[in-house]
Image (cartoon, rainbow, N blue to C red):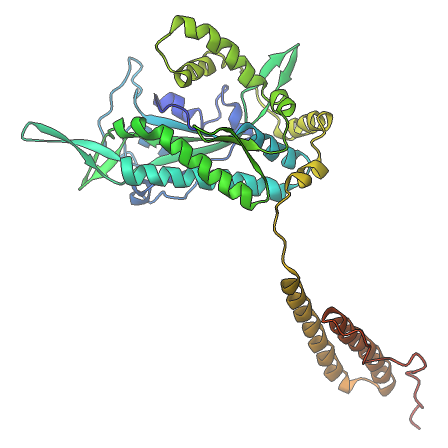
Length: 402
């Protein structure tokens, strides 16, 4: 899903990148990457996020602080109050659990595949937003109109865990694969940078959330996992085979938010469910510690063992994974055998300068090796008769030259 877009200050935005005391993500998150045609104009697209450049752009300056690209509104502390628009893309809980379980159980390949599927889905949605909803307001002769610009500067930070909570004097950290996409408040029109107009992004973010889930579900199916629809109207889904009890066990942070949301509903009856959840999330951000990611994986591995989510179970969930068909396997096997036979013949040619006794013994070994390969090839191709046999009585003994 995508959270309700939220304008954040430059200080809040920097918490995703900088290592301050509240940035527990820094120990487990990546450095972040740039995306967007606006980032491309500045030579940043696809590059890791540099802290100084990030700070400059949040303040409306260029990458070298030589120019103020956009005039920004600031609070009494002097920081920009609309530095970036935060869109948070969160994978379904079962996907986060599957990612963490694969990582904890040593299946790095599967974990990387799941993370890549999530990040690619996020990138596609952001590209869609840029191409359709990137805009600014232009005023000419006293008339202001909306103009689409088709370029944005987006900073992406992917994180793997939820904010830690305390339960019975224990610190619990649940899996939560999510990406913060910060759309910086600047876009280029003609030769000028201007603040973005975010109205259409707010109007269409729910649709974009559906697009994200569609992309995610399709690629998870390609990876061999079955999808179970939990809300057909909204397009919500989970990985089939991950039980409700497992989802609840690894949703402690969500449960904490749920409890507060019920209280907030009475105080703010006109706010949407999504808005209330974001309020609850901010009100419960009490954690000030750091996370040892390696140690956390060991802890979560034990939690997974208790609910039976081990490597064997994960592989069973991949029911529909596609394997090469028999013709593909046969073709590849024949190719390997043919290359081995060629290598054997090449070795035979290299023996010309060796002593005769060494030649005889080595060639006998090579003939046996070639015969075994050819017989194997025939067997793979359905020919059961061994047309190339080696006489076990053959000897490499020869009469010494006098």
